Amino acid sequence: LKGDLEIYAKAPNKILTIQNISGIGVIRDGYDGQSAWSDSPMSGLREKSGAELAAIAFQSDFYAPLRTKQRYSKLELKGKEKVGDRETWLILATPPEGTAIRLYYDIQTGLQARVDREIVLPQGTFSVQTTLDDYRDVEGIKIPFTTYEESSVAKAVIKLTEVKSNVTIDDAKFKKPAGQ
Image (cartoon, rainbow, N blue to C red; front, side, top):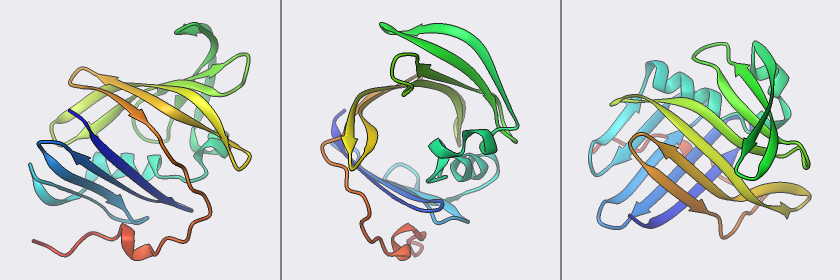
């Protein structure tokens, strides 16, 4: 499958993703800092709750890369591991809720190379491996322009074509659409 993806993020914890996938249609997922929702051709408009809501709330922290020590109740250096051809430090990060996340940081650059985590969906809990690559400078910040996501149910390659920062985004963009 191929498609386009737009991601909007606003500090401190708002996010909206819009996927337009050929043959499927438009899938929108949003979080306004308190409530999360999904709107897709397969399941319609629904509100997220429980573990799914907690996961999106945790993942929507705009400043997450700067707050690693504050976001996890425990961080353990587990040693060195290879990610592709890169030597990395593996850190086991335990969040306040949920299972531990494996964070891999490139020893040469200090940039995050991979994240292994579990995601909660209505269909169940799935392990996801996210590899970050092709870092580019965007206004002084290194951003991975290519992301590889792999789970037991799907593989995806996400290639960014454009990143804009300090753009004004109306809070209404993140709100759940009116029921349909």
